[in-house]
Amino acid sequence: MPRPLRVAVVGSGPSGLYAADALASQEALPLEVDVIERLPVPFGLVRYGVAPDHLSIRSVRDTLDKVLDRPGVRFVGNVRVGTDITVTDLHGCFDAVVWTYGASGDRRLGIPGEDLAGSVAATDFVAWYCGHPDADRTLFEDLVPKATGVVVVGIGNVAVDVTRVLAKTVPELDHTDMPQHVLDALGRSQVTDIHVLGRRGPAQATFTTKELRELGELAEADILVDPADLVLDPASQSIVDSDKAVARNLEVMRGWADRVPEGRPRRIHLRFFARPVELRGTEGVQAVVVERTRLTVDGGAEGTGELHEIAANVVVRSVGYRGTALDEVPFDSQRSVIPHVDGRVQRDGAAVPGEYVAGWIKRGPTGIIGTNKKDATATVASLLEDAAAGLLPEPASPDSADFDALLARRGVEVVTTAGWRRIDAAERARGAARGRDRTTIHAAADLLSEARP
Image: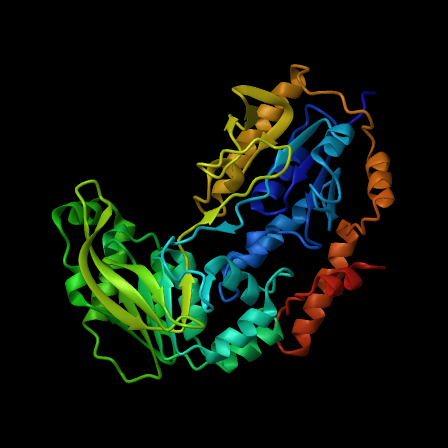
């Protein structure tokens, strides 16, 4: 009987687990799949990127979790590729490697004052309120209680999530799995005004209607929209006429523009045709200089030269995620992705034997969670085609015990599937003590402690 084909999937977010599922589902070849994750816990941005108050979206974790119970699939957590093991090590132990480690970096605004204290990336803020082990607790637990005016730059779903979390009361968040220290910090917030800036118009915004509508349903926040921003040029009207989702967004925003503010303690200002050009302050951000923009003929935005200031001591940039390079792996620095053809990693115009890519690090940060399933399945099809054609390189130590021994020699404390199950049970127990389904354990040391038998 031939030995099982050994595949390493690096990254345990949706694309990684969908790839593992596709591999485990095929019946043509005997397979063993190790899902290698740098954190002690799986699920990537489903755990650390989806807003904690979006319980229905976060529940996809339960579906993904079942993949780890499939025969031949192992979770190998707390293992850093590039630090604990090298790409060469992986090729020595596996027939194929599938890179699915996502796009966790942030994009910058590139304007003066961006490095002032109080200017932060949405990726870092989201990581903090989701309980990511790498989040800077000191930064945000000092920043959030002092914030009064906030500018959120961006008009996508992440910007909406950040705005909603800052505008909600603690009772509106208490049912979530946020770490208690996050809820405590948010409970001390003094935020009165949140300005959401989009450099283009409402027809070009990328948020979805469900997320947008939630901003108008908060207990203690009025939402303000300038009716003039909702007057559409012919090109924008064409978008609305052809896209039902955009049309629904416009309907929601026009309803807000017609509202009379109720004098609630917080105000959300949704502002289009506005881009920040400078952050001003001495020791920290005190104001944001905003330029009025207009649409160009090709659908972009250009400045008009009309400037004004917004008083704010916190600025959150939410202008996109970007992929980051991994040593020994080809990388397209212009697009921030691993170059590929049909999921096969490319170097100098040729496929790298035994290397594949799926998810955001393959195509960029686009699509919804479900998009990753089709994407991962397509990559796995290329891998299986190459395996059938005998194109995969032969590893020197194609045995799971050899890989485990290598990690042990390196002193890596691996979190197995069983270890993750113990963490899961501990988080559920902490949540039950506070009347919630779960409370996220944030510290890596605590996660590792709970993972141990």
